[in-house]
Image (cartoon, rainbow, N blue to C red):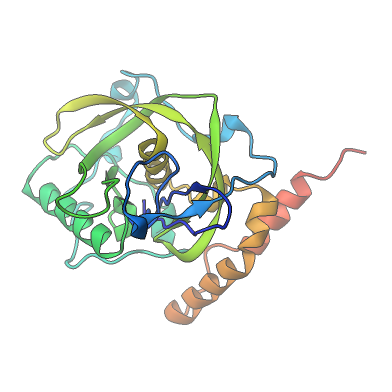
Length: 276
């Protein structure tokens, strides 16, 4: 993810996801480096329905029967330019389909290394491929947030096959949304199937900070952004900042913003009107 969490006066240390900054930490982690401690207070607002945790779930083995050739990344899909740059909202790249990878070659290894490089340079602890303009099913993360420390994780074509009913609310930020932080509720633990950088299959159980980081990045692979997981009340608190990013995009590209937080909030408000 590319998230950074904001410090708060009261409580547990918080996490960061899309930009997952190494200067912020979840209350679960045990790092003693004071420069990395951030605090957040869980929101008391009603969370979104637990049923909306993941837009996609798949049973192990199902994918072999439903995937088509166009679902896999071509050589062109995996092409990238150095140095990588972070893609910011509301660039449509963040909503584009991310194809599965079936070529585990030197190009993929170079992409992974460059993703770690920019993640560390931007004080992140997690990053997804679409956040650097490559629309494929790939993420990297390292809870320590610095090279030579912690464990570097690479997950290719990940699939969540189980998520806990217990959820945790935390203040998240994202590299694709610089300076923006808000509460997001996510399952406390998850079980994942994936491939490593060499294409070998593996399973992993994630909890605490690693579970949150993974889920934030996994959302990116589904074209889901962290504000999609927020309640209308929480989304309203970051509305001015999102509108500014939309205006910045229009000024930079000369094109209308492909997304509008005003429209999103309008749809949500209509959807919550009481029945007559």
